[in-house]
Length: 195
Image 1 (cartoon, rainbow, N blue to C red):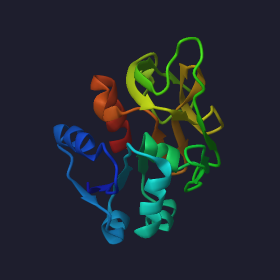
Image 2: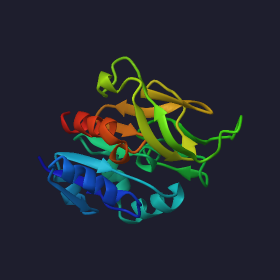
Image 3: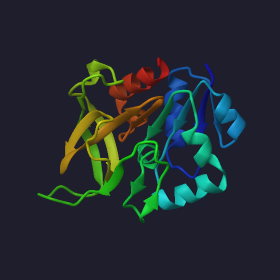
Image 4: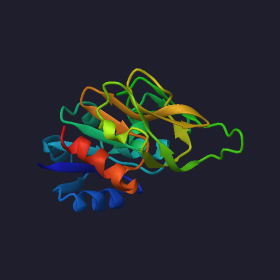
């Protein structure tokens, strides 16, 4: 299996790489459209800010490439948010794979923003995620979230319920960081790799 990690100004490519190395997965980190198109699976990682990242993606002409990919694609954190329609982060138009908004958390009841730390997953019916992940804790770092919607495949509660995972056609996404989520994260990556 050949896996491509989309290269852009994202902060967590290194930790995703280490996680895949531990799983003995062959991968390439690339912004080359041909390499991405010809990969068996694609990971769209992300730590960063929505508008600068979308500017980079447009400049590299990766926006049309990503939305037209036919193989399984996994968005992580900002990668998931950029797969949505629009982000409140600097009023950014995103890729629109998921016709959903990305909203900013509004702090409440001493719950701080950004949301940082370990929180529990609640797996939805017909989720692409392994049912063994029900009530497991995974690691989040984010200030923006996708509301629960028809494409939600896992829910987490922080300030309000939000989508911890999404799925539509060949596009899969997680708001948390599987590469930093210990054994639960390994299970998530294995779920994706076995698609």
